[in-house]
Length: 160
Image (cartoon, rainbow, N blue to C red; front, side, top):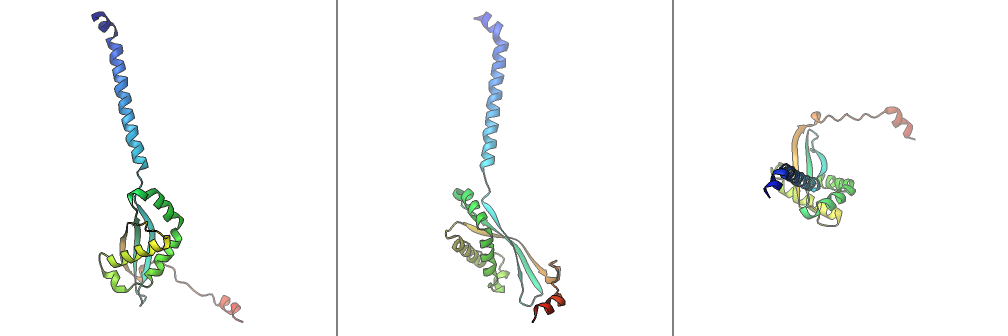
């Protein structure tokens, strides 16, 4: 028995190191695959700009939908497929919002109303909650939107 241990102890040590190395590599790969399948629950519904009634101020912000953990993959696909319809529905609702509601720091009423609009547009209650981020109030001249000019030649040509 002692001769066998003396003769093969290096081979046994190498085999043990290979087994330990394989276990470490397997563990790292399994953890990496878990990270790749973890998708974010948040989905951006876009950036929106509201212009005040007196055309001097604008409010710009982004809206994000938080999806239930169990439906994060299917929910993202549904939201991507209906992105522009949802975007339009949100814009239509925001045009009717009272300016006083925009002063609420938590914007709870707006979030609840927009969540209802999104759920109605999708036909199912898919969104868990809405997040409003990057809220900015800017003077209208800081909006960096080129002014539209009317070409008088085109106006004259189109009128009979």
